[in-house]
Length: 141
Image (cartoon, rainbow, N blue to C red; front, side):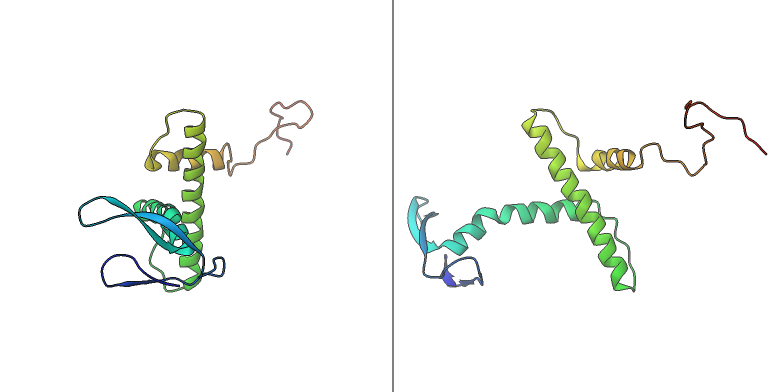
């Protein structure tokens, strides 16, 4: 699809979801500042409607990344997947707080909360507990 929004630049979009012939009406401001209805392809209208989520995601990813320099491509990919999971968890956390009308914490404060939740009470030391009584057992040598 090609569309001329404002000025002389053409906007190019490739989509397998939208038909290039389908048009919809969007509001654009003219030189006087008044909103005027303009027809544009539905693919471009959908992109403009939903592109804010991608920008927000990129902003969250750039703020507190865990990636490090590496010569091996798979390590960079691994760090990217971890960062993506953390950002997605934070977005879901914010949505849940908004639905419950609770105040949410910043992403910087959320990250330690997430790690504490994931690690929970894990310890490398072996605990000597009896399974049946759930009390500390005496060590048998």
